[in-house]
View 1 (cartoon, rainbow, N blue to C red):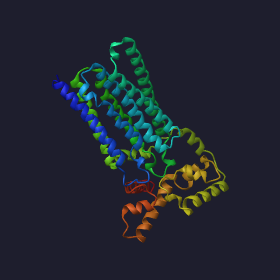
View 2 (tube, rainbow, N blue to C red):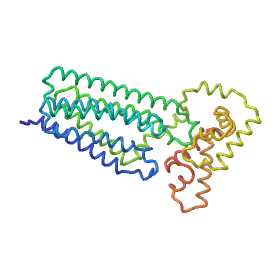
View 3 (tube, rainbow, N blue to C red):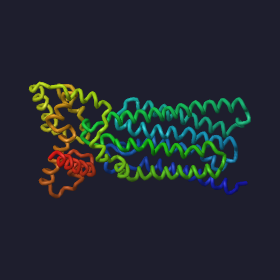
View 4 (cartoon, helix red, strand yellow):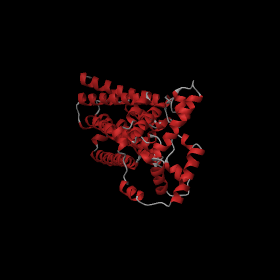
Length: 374
């Protein structure tokens, strides 16, 4: 017979399953109207998240069979293995897509394949045999789960360290727009996902149905928060904004090397040739209108190394970011005069800004930069 605790647990588990299904449907059908050509730039990749959030379908029988010890063990195993995988995929798939990390798909799909194989196998065993009564079988299953859990945790640690390396590699001088790497969002998301992992602990290491139900309900709250991210990319943009203080002190893991490079003198003739190539590629060919232009693109189209080009940008153009966005702002002002009835979205897009919000942010910060240098 069901008591109140059992009923609460069943309601919580079924609600969790429904919330995951809703996220799967929304993530699959929702398209960011501001990023139709690159929807994954704002929101986690569709296929991977769809696959992750439909896996709770395996928990459906447990809604009414959870009184059986083997089924209860299966549910705990699912949560134990699922959220390290969620953690890893949320981190590496999002930021790896932005950074175009080559081993990304192989890494992610290996983790997902192991996870799906494990939870499906354990489900089959839980529903078809009395394996908990067999001590040898139980120890083997327990050992396999422990190995997989360790692997998934290590994968999560690797993903975290990889993102931290990308954070350290970020430098304002290399990018023409902050949308090319969500620096602040990257710093905060680790903490956000750590909370998610903590919520899973009560579902695994307690036999209290009330505590497990409360923990599952908190996971539903997290699912709702994620759903808001899917519906409103502006929330993501808010996380991605760079604070003014962080702009003034950009991260550069090789700052000492850059300082040494800047001390190197460059022949005036070489400087003039580099300036000519920069102006030709950036201004005359209007590549500054590319919203994702990086200094690497400029270097690839010059006949000189990155150090020389970077120094010329700094010494002769006031820095890559300032130079590119100064051209964009001038273009935007001219475009506005020539097309007085244009919307700000159109002006921003035509001027090489990723969005209207980016345009306003750059304009405000460039004004602050110009004021500080007067």
